[in-house]
Amino acid sequence: MQTRRRFVFAHDGDTLVDIAARAFPDDTATAQQVPSWNLHLAYRRSPTDDPARLLPTDIVYLEPPLP
Image (tube, rainbow, N blue to C red; front, side, top):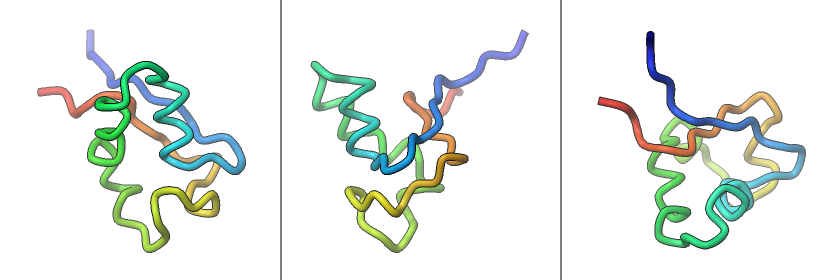
């Protein structure tokens, strides 16, 4: 059986900051790592807190890459 990373899809108007706050409401240190787990999103031109940056079809990983 293959293990998969936890992920969510972005909601309309979400930012990586919003998703991290929802996924880790009591853990700001982990929430700050979310962009580093999503380099495919972090390297887009718009800033992390720009709502236009994420599409509803974007997969946002909630944990680091598995070994």
